[in-house]
Amino acid sequence: MDKNQNMFIELIEEIESRILANGKIDKQEAAVLLDLPYNLLVKLSAAADRIRINFLGNKFDSCSLINAKSGLCSEDCAFCAQSAKHRGASEIYDLKSTEEILGAARTAKAFGASRFCTVTSGGALSDQDFDKLIEALHTVKSEVDIALDASLGFLNEDRAAKLFGVGVTRYNHNLESSRDYYPSVCSTHSYESRVKTVKLVKSKGASACCGGIIGLGESPSQRMDLAFTLADLGVDCVPINILNPRPGTPLQNARPPEPMEIIKTIALFRLVLPSATIKIAGGRERNLGDFQAMALRSGANGMIIGGYLTTGGRSVEDDLRMVRQAGFDISHMC
Image (cartoon, rainbow, N blue to C red; front, side, top):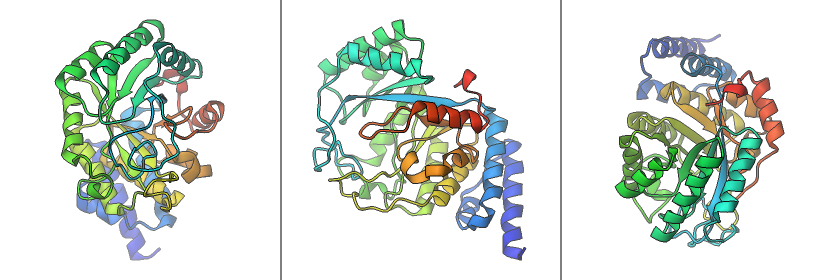
């Protein structure tokens, strides 16, 4: 083994020991590990896996989504088929009824999800729709034994109080990419406006779910910038989506990263965020394929199951079988 490879191995071992002793990886070290050759990826994955076990054990976080209001979003996010600015192929419908949302929650509970997330398109719901949704979530909370998440766009103090008062314990608001790359992703609102919502969630004592999408055209170092921003914000749950290009969007012809690059990214996110839940989310089936289980043993400890907002997933039975075979305890999910 040459000196360069020995340097990588020694660096991984040093960082792992430091993190297990409640220390941190720094940005310069993360930048070095971005150049890790793939033949040493197993060393990085094993270190990330041990860090995950040390801080989180073998508990697994599974979340099922309902796209409760779809399409005609006024924002111009380049990846999103629900934007009215693009000619995406997503469905368009108004807020679903309480009965539909309740039925989806019951289905999620029946197939083994530990959390149920209600998602709506657009920057914010109208006041009328927001109040209807609060009533629906109250019904779900009273009738289904499942943890409630929500992802409804930008929040203010009043809406945050209502959401968390009705029993929502986790709020999702992704940053999507690094601060400096974000203008290439979206021009209709600022990065800081997204950060503001995440900070509001944290200030209310709720769990902040915040991650991003890799494969938007960003550099590997910009992915690490996102990871360190999430660590600075103290987010609790980090969904890592991998671009699944949607027809009609500006990124419809983009080439997503290869499986080994995705695995490396997940492992490095675990080093930066040792105690956060890290979920492999949208695009995992298409982009990871047979390497999904490897992602779970490279630092991830959660998944979105049962499909996504505008695309389907694979069967829940296959996903949960893979989770069990990867060594996780799905009888005590997060």
